[in-house]
Length: 277
Image 1 (cartoon, rainbow, N blue to C red):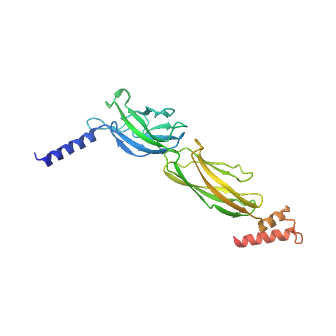
Image 2: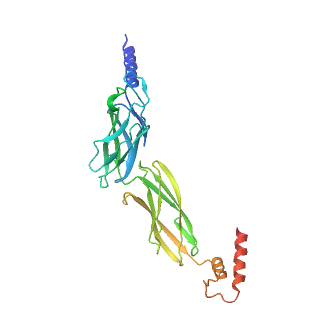
Image 3: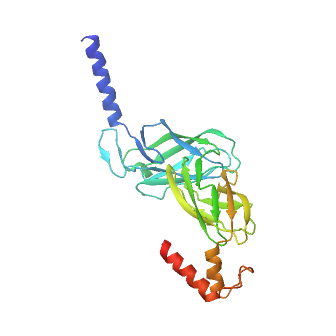
C-alpha cells in the first residue's frame, strides 16, 4: 500500500473512532462536542456571578449506537476555592448545572471539571469528564446611554435609553441607579441575558429649575464592582404652558401672572397643546 493510501486509511480509522466515541454535547453558554478529557472555553464571568452549563443527555456508546438518555446527571467537580455548584436534576434533558464564582475570586483563567454520569452504568457508558475554562474579569458588559445632555421643564419626565450589552456568560440581574440628582432614589432592576444587547427606558425629572450633573450607573446585583457609569447633564427650566395648566387647576406657580383670568390661561394651554399634537 502506498504512503498516501496508508495515510488515508489511518485518517478514516480516526474518524470512525471519533464517531464511535462517547461524547458530551455542550449546548450553553457556548456549543461544543467533547470527548473524554477535552476542553472548552466558555467565556467571561465576573466575581460573585453565576452561570449555567447545559448539555444534551444524548451520546453514543463504543459501538457508535445512539443512546438517547445516555447521561443521567451532570455535575461540576474540582471547583476553585470558594466556588459552588448545583448538579443537574436526575434524568433532566438537556442537563443544566449552575456554577457560582467566589465573590473575591482573583481575575484570571480558571479550570472547572464537568462530569457526566451514567447512573449504575445501565447503558454501559460509565462516566465522562471534560474541562470547562472561564475568564474571571469585571469587564463583562458594555453600556451606552442616550441622550447625555437633556433640556426639560419642571416635573416633566425625560426618558433615558439605557443599552446593556452583556458580553459575559451570566444572566444575573443589573441595577440602574442615578447618583448626584437631588432627592432621587429610584432604582430599576433589569435582566440582560448573556451574549445579548438589551435596551431599557429610564425616566428622570426634577421639581425645581436648575442645571444638574449626575451619574447614571449600571452595576451587577451580585457585585457592585462590576459597574459602568455615564455622566448626564440636565437643564430644567419653567415651562410656561405647563404653568398655565397648573394655574388653571388652581395652583399658583408664577407670581408674576396677575392680569388674565386663570380659566383663560388654561384654555390657551389646552388649545396650543391640541394644535402641536
